[in-house]
Length: 474
Image (spheres, rainbow, N blue to C red):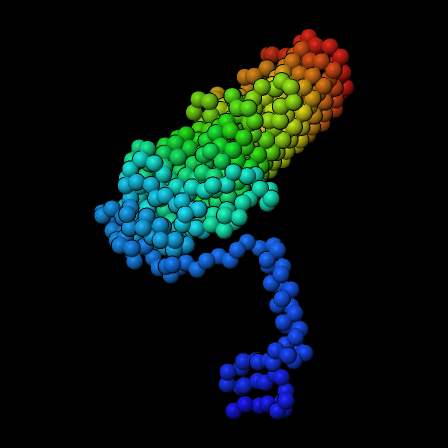
């Protein structure tokens, strides 16, 4: 049954189909025609060419290409055939997919590609190299004007989601990416590989989230002399990786944001090392993480190493804020950096240093609590020292330092220039509250320095050795 407004009406409504219709030359039709034309003109001006239809149903799984997922037979060829077919979504149902060589996703050839599971699929890499290797062609920056049409068309946001990757070969890696744009890895477990996530050559705009990167004998996330701008690491658990948790060495790296992660027992939990590189690393934020453990020789929770401090070096722009850091040789270690702020952290049980800053400039250290927490090491093994050495330009305010045991003092400044140390509380440190050596043009004011038990030894609140133009105000 249909209800019609009138015989000449341009709009009718059929109760059964609930479909609207209109006459193209009615007023409504003309309005929609004009709007459609305008939209089409905008699309031609602003949008890339239409994405071609895939040749394979996007819901087809790798089983359709012959992958068995039984963990015994080699599924390399079957999964590679699924990738080469340009099926867009490479879906892995429950099972263990044994592969013996890398799955190559040549994005410009196969088009936009994701490799996805529902958390029940495992890829077992039995040969050398990465289990999955994404290859793009992006040579531009992160600026939209440098992204070529073929990158938007065929390569945007390669995605891995909801799978586990394990390695059974000493040189097996997890996921490797080169010249990609907007690589996104989420809800992935990678373990027993060499490097879990390995970024090489050049990449732009990487997001790693909600991943478990566990017990690999290389690095958890490895920025390997890569030209990379913009990487966000969030809500990940990265632990027991022998070569480090998050490691960046060399390259030209900007915009590292690590937030909300648990990173522990990696010896070097976060290592950003620009030594020997021309461009180095800058614009780093480590916020809201728990970073702790393993405590071997040379261990650190956050270690930033710039290159030469000479000239107008840009290695720095570092923020370390609101983290919990403990149980390593040096909790925060800043070397050859500029423009650094460290604020709001709970730092404890540094076997040598809770905080060490050397050969750096323009360093601001705000309120942090630094001391010793009983669960990690005992009083005979934790020094908990705070040291600034050979630094130019610094503000240290509101530090709460307690129980520095064998170092000269709770807070030590050695050969520093233009520093202001104010409003700090230093309690129960074995030898002195503050130790100042060969300072130049510094102001030390308004600090509370106390020691509970002096015993037979006369305890010194402040020790000053050498220096010039140092003003000390109680």
